[in-house]
Image (cartoon, rainbow, N blue to C red; front, side, top):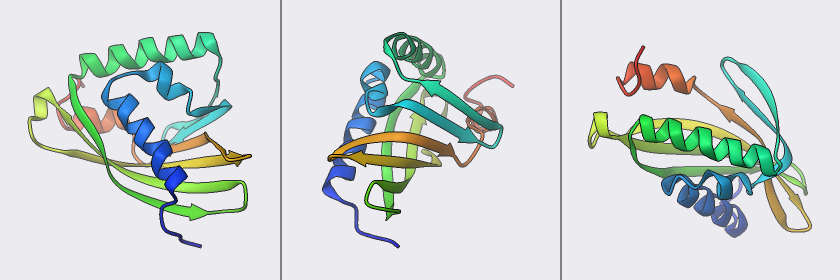
Length: 144
């Protein structure tokens, strides 16, 4: 069942986008649940979201996107579906720019399963619709 984008979901992804833009991955990790699943074309992985993992996540993501020379990232659209009283599925259409691609917007989709417990929203699962490494190689952003 489709719905309009709720204010709380908009706020969650506004923070997510802002943290991503600033490469503040420690703060971004605070939007994830204590346990998190990540999935994509190459498989599924479980992450624990604790102090050490947030530090390592921040360090690795910051290094990767700095090396890839990410210059901007923004949400192009959100599509929210309510699954139950506690869960939402949100498909985000992203656009990113890199130094090597100039003004060319690299577009991609990620779906997020959001859990709402007493009004507190947390991302519990995200699914990349495309292999990010392959896409970045295809656009010449990272080496093959």
